[in-house]
Image (tube, rainbow, N blue to C red; front, side, top):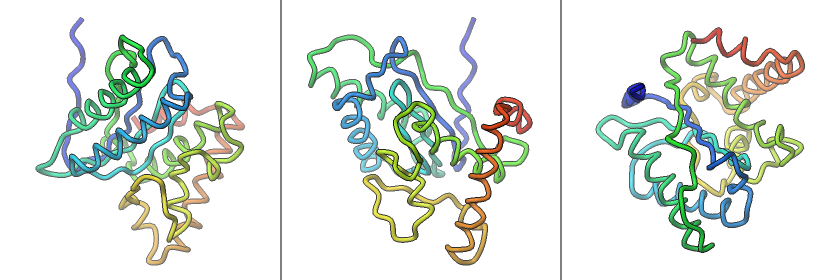
Length: 205
């Protein structure tokens, strides 16, 4: 069966995720964490795009990336990040073979029924992923902790995060934006308590 065609809409926001080979926790190792972040930084230097969110979750990762018109498409960006991470990891550890399970999965946020609502909720879904895996007690304390770039106006992140324009349009000042974003955190926690995450997400597609 042929693979479905990748949606490469430029100027759109892509939620991308990818699993390590055999669902192994390679990204949870010192080398995995280090080289994944290095690969993203190298990609930011090589290509122009906006990194909206990122978390490393043991055996997989989540990225929210907004591509720019006339610049690298999502396939090129993701291929670079994944290939550089794999090369660095194998070179440092003497390992051989693939690091990743097949190609990455992705969804274009702007194709959902309510893009703004979906993205603001998705920020918390990604932020809480490490917590669900027992890597952190709170997304604010995650090793990467991208969400702090949204919560704190002058936060200095390890990696450059661009606040999405849906967040920026929530209000005229940062404090008001944060208060509205925190309401989406509560929505996420309520859905988690009800264990109806898939039902909620399916309503946007």
